[in-house]
Amino acid sequence: MASAVTYAAEVVGYPHAPVWAVLATALLAILGFVNHVRFVRSGPGGTWAARYFDTDSPKELRNLPFAQLPGAVMLAMWAVMLAYTRVSGQETWDAIMGLFLFASFVFGAVAVKRLYRPPRRAKPRWLREMEREEEERQAR
Image 1 (cartoon, rainbow, N blue to C red):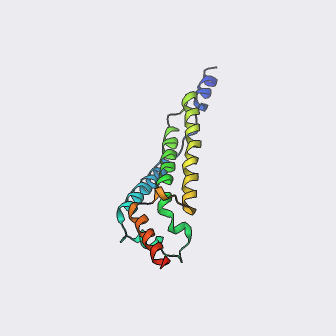
Image 2 (spheres, one colour):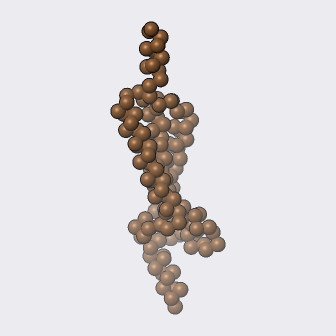
């Protein structure tokens, strides 16, 4: 009887995620945040500015910096969810973490959308000014 109760207590909660999965998602999230900050601060002389105006590159590569922040948020949420599996077991918190995981997909969808059509508000000021100059040059 005691072994059946012990077994039932062990089954409750999510299966434990491997430590490498938690570390990998956390590292990728940090990398995304750092690259986003580097892109915003790089200015018009940075490599991302040159890539953005290179029409020979695929659109997804040119727009990659705009997807880094929402992608990093999504990966950070995954890291939290994967780390939570080590202490899961309470039904309410397990349900909240499940919803948390599904909420992360919204950020993933935003990241994918920004790969193809980044909104103007996602572009740093220096890039908007460069685009305006480029449009004026082409209009002449």
